[in-house]
Length: 96
Length: 479
Image (cartoon, rainbow over the protein chains, first blue to last red):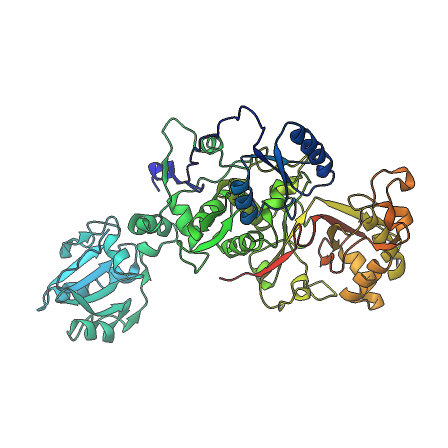
């Protein structure tokens, strides 16, 4: 074996490059916008989300509540799609 | 590289190092005086034998491409096509292939040949790369002369914190000989980035982990077992709890590849145990994109997240195997994956009857994650041989042992509700009058492993169980 052969290795990664996605601009106000609140189903996440709903409603936002079936898995595609077509803003409440 | 064509007539491949080749030189000289043109290729000494003006097969391309496994080999070529071949020295065969008679009249009728240099174990991996390189599709990464290759792999973020073996094409090609599957076959979709992984990429990471080719089918099976919604490696990776994939191996193949099921079974020192689990975790990192501090949010983690893989001691076990209890025959090779924390020790050096020993197991299992936690977590009991003997002598089978442990872990709700025992953690108050089991049905797995001395066993605690979390998965290991 020549030493030069040892200097070339095979890439162990998935060789993907992350695409860059522009962030949506920050809204001037939440008044009149639909805000989705996603509960990940962890204990006491609802306490936090209840309070957020109160505050957002006071600010004139239209609040919709969503919940993942389990905190241990990513949100199902259908749920993500539903949120994306119904809401202009989304807040995901993590726990721990 | 295209297959090099051979000249018309007789082609003879030899090497000086081979005694049979030296013996047949007069025969080749005899053939050289015949009607067919004779071309001699020599593998080692370019001047051997001078009388026959040999061509040096310096890069062994003639030998490799024409599948020369033995020298001498005699080929007869007509219109560019091989029509006959013989190896070693068998007078009748040489006469058949060459069409000449009275060859080597002073020689014995038969002498076996020697191994061709093109199949020399020290060269074959290099030749496989030299002549078959185009089969692999991974990006080639050239490490600069001034770079240390081990440091270069740390710098690129490819390691788990320990050095990895550089995945050269030669090593990856050798790794691929461990499976019958094609390098392009897709094995799984790896979370968290949900990327398809091919056998080739599995092999690259297996090389880095330090695997031998014969471990590759175990890595593939383990990867298939964790990359699905049932086991949910995404959650096992992402959780703040200290769990990782624990891989329990069953079947005769565990002994064939030299896995440890005995002394120091969870510890250092066994290559198969340590590198199979490590390869799977490297794949989660390198292909799935699952890295600590990113998607991996573990509060503490555990050292088993480098590799936690071991074999069941089936030969010494009084019981059916774990894989059998999950529906497979004990004659097949299998992996069972479990989302587990580090092992903890169960000490009982006095129990000589199964009831007493079972009381110890129940008391220790009660504390799993929290003495007031019920139903949420599974566990593996890894029974040491000296504890298992107590049950074997009493005639308790696997099912009886598990039933008796379960029976001792039916807990009154009054001990479990929030605030009971001065502990805030617990079940809601409404469960006060209810008796709750520590483990769900099937939530305890039993494995026989460990050294022959020591009245100890081990418990491996699990993670959020069932459909909302992770279920153990058993997969057959296929060649």
